[in-house]
Amino acid sequence: MTSIPEHAAGFTDEAGYLDFATRGPVGTAVADEVRGLVDLQARSRFGAGAALDEQAGRVRRAVAAVVGVRADQVAFQSSAAEGLLLVLSGLTGGLLLPTTSSTAVVLAVHGAAATASGPTPSVVRPAGDVVTVADLAAAVTDETAAVVVSLVDPRSGALLDLAAVREAVGDRLLVVDADEAFGVVDAPWALADVVVAGGQAGVRAGAGTGFATFSDRALARLRPALRGVAGSAATAVAPALVPAPAADADAHRLGPADPIAQARLATALEGLAEVGQAAVAAAVADRAARVVDLADAAAMPVLTPRVAAERAGTIVLAPEPAELTALAAALHNHGITATVREGTVRLSVHVTTGEATFGLLRDAFTAAAAGTTWA
Image 1 (cartoon, rainbow, N blue to C red):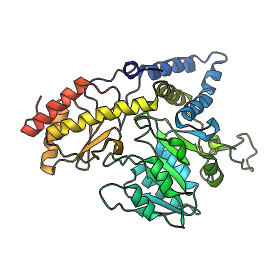
Image 2: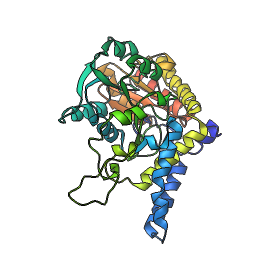
Image 3: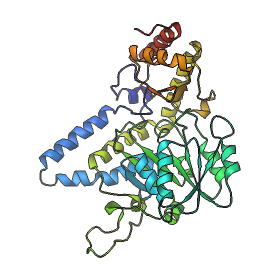
Image 4: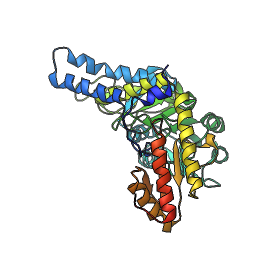
């Protein structure tokens, strides 16, 4: 096993980067893999294609090892948004989703519902600021065929307990949008019927990478409604024939994947498996707690739950509107990369977030509180 310091040493992101929920800088292993395969692709020596073709099986094995499923239950996707649309388009019957769902979930549900035999969505409106397991349990009815949740609320950073959600929804299909959770949260992923995530954030595999995993009953119940060539059992057929869907999770795919993107995701996940999800999650939780402490010391309002088990690696600050500009300017002027949107500031950490970054953040908070935004 690799230790957290050893794992962190494999990355080169500079101090001040606190936007891992948007874009996680790739590590040296991923960058080296890309350079090697690009060179191989450029030269295209005899037999080079085999090294590219084998990335499809490699990435399925890498995802399966981390999620806890079989390789044939994994479908590579170019993004979580693509995976969610393909999955939800295969549903029929009642589909329940919280109003705190990610934009990718909302758009996928809207697109799926517009199809001729798509699902019938209904929303869960939380009693408080964030959706809870109790909210979900109260909203489930006999007409509910499936429930889709964003494990991390993108607006507040609140984290749902996956095991508790599984118990609350019972025998309905449980679809989990893990886009802001995967790579920084240690969850019992195999309890979900479908897990969809991109690799650009916490996994740190870069854009154009993602996956969907399926339980056996999900594969049995979901129709591969929007499958493409990559989701078919055969690709060389007469024009008048429609090939049957693939016999496994690949039935829920569109076009052929970029093998270099598959290699990036496989490399990142192999590194995650080596250090362990639990170790990474613990390190991220410690760093998230540091951000909360610094925000409290500067009297910055924190929207994210205070209980460590109820948050991931994202801390959302909700300053008064008149103070938002000063805070955003102070962060910028002190070299802090963060996301400012909808009246909030989102700071997200990873294992590489160190003392230098915390020092910059402390200085930025101090400057914002004092009304001084220059470094």
